[in-house]
Image 1 (cartoon, rainbow, N blue to C red):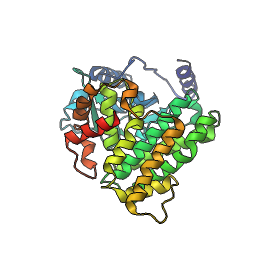
Image 2: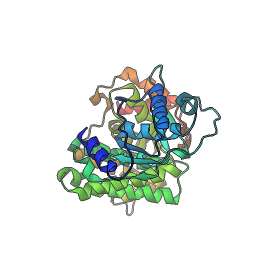
Image 3: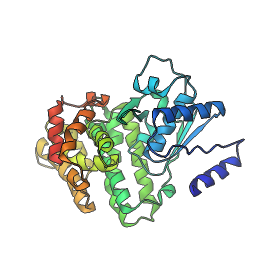
Length: 341
């Protein structure tokens, strides 16, 4: 609340009025989204500022869109009725830490009211007008927080590169993000007061967001979103655990792209075959894990083997699995999860 008060007081010096809306404590229900949008509408709000982490930014995107449209959240985000949407209220997002590019991409997650199952929604109207990314805001982050967020950005970058919708521009952004994380993640953990390293990580996240806005997130994010919904894992922990296993699964179908990833990780790939160079990409990721002492098994986070079929089933429902470089039957999704267990 101290941070909120500072922001509110600062804004009030320059504009007519500020309403602090903090009535939602957890992932918003559809009804809570409708209530927040109605409140913004009757208040004649002309700008929405989303401040916080993953769920806060998601909610701000959805409320900004609903507030300018006379429609219910369920109709727009779940049933996806053919509603002619109007442009949303201008949206500014201030992430308190990088969120794998989701802060600057036109995507959001929504929860069903009945069983709280997560759903994925994408629309060009979810692009924010502005993102304010400032490492000073993230001073609360522990070394463990920085590690899992940084590896989450790595995973999102790899997802974007592996997408069949990727192109030279999106690959360039994602590879640059991988280079930045590789060079700055360990220094950011060793010297947490040095904002230069953290600012670089914020920048890498924005690059990934620009990339998967035109390309797509993929298997690692699908599995992580499902795992975080059905277990006690958060999406960043899940991304970090599942990345090497997803990379191993796709190695033979995307070997050429893995060579680019290996170069971004500064791996020596001279005088070796394409497959050997691709393996170097996976090894490069695992080296980072070993140095950061990141857990590499789902079981280390008390995920139960009985949870895996449910995670696979939910992951297979997300639309961005259509972007994968090879067809992925549900039983093979379970195989990847078992390998990661």
